[in-house]
Amino acid sequence: MAKTVCYCLMPRSPFHFGERGVGMEEASVVLHADTLFSALCLTLLELNEDLSQLLDRFPRQRFDQGRPGVMASGIPPFRLASAFPFWASAEGEHVFFFPKPFLPLPRPSAAADLRQAKALKRIQFVSQPLFEAWLAGEKLDFDAGHLIQGGKIWLTPAERQRIDADTLWVEETRPHVTVDRRSGASQVFAVGQVRFAPRAGLFFLVAYRDEGWQPRLEKALRALGDSGIGGERSTGRGQFRLEIVEPFALKTPSQANAFTTLSLYWPPEQEVQTGILEGAAYGLSMRRGWIASPQGMNLRRRGVRMLSEGSVFPRLPQGALVDVRPLDPEEVPNVPHDVWRYGLAFPWPCRRNGEGNHG
Image 1: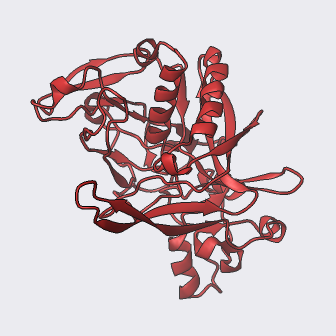
Image 2 (image 1 turned 45 degrees about the horizontal axis):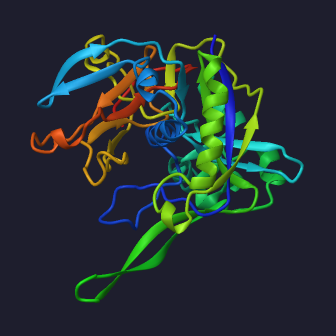
């Protein structure tokens, strides 16, 4: 059985995690697992780890001219969840927020009005006790008075009394100026960032099958805390202090009949053929970006659609690393190494009644 460890990123500066948009104005509060995995791989390489040996232990799906090639098998030494918000009291008590699962919404009480029903649909995150009850199929009594963060976070009544802030983070933009080297002309542009309140930050889970990787990942995480994670690191963004919560427990429903995922999930062709998407309930996320290694800098990775966190599947999702080398034949020779995007699910059992649907 895999050992699960919780890591808390206590921000020392704002974060910039790229989100879809025209330029750099958009930023996400979630640090997706694929971004986290890429940052860890580059840091491990800088720490003189054998990165090729690590990647060879993961299932990998290559592509040839856009078509699926041979699927390489592997047993991953660990799995990463995406990083979601949390809050900690002055005494160090943590309240963790998980993505709203793609399960039937809890029915409002008979006295609830239409406004409460609409508020329920706008929720993005729920606290751990609510998340565990939702996955178990338990009845949940909704009260819009237990929402914070502009209606994005749902808390239990006890948590609402304990948390002394209505806003845990602020999404904002900051102006930047670029100067043309030849003409000297300046141009102003905006960069989005997420700034957390004191005692708030991001957390993520790691399930270790090979516990020998725990000290190595934690060393890389501490290095990332100094250098920064995400975009705009050269301007000081993305720095954090690492806290480790161990042991960490997330309840498993006693009568589970499905699985949700706490990371983005890319189902390889063989999983699709076995019917992993039949009866599933999921959202889609288009993942793009630039190659960050020194050998492939300034080349755009191939875009890939992934299934979002909170998606629900009738059977155990696995996932794989997906080949995202540039498709342009003239660009491929300029990348002297493989380019992988992390697409492994972080599955957790849940209970679901009724048929699934596409989100």
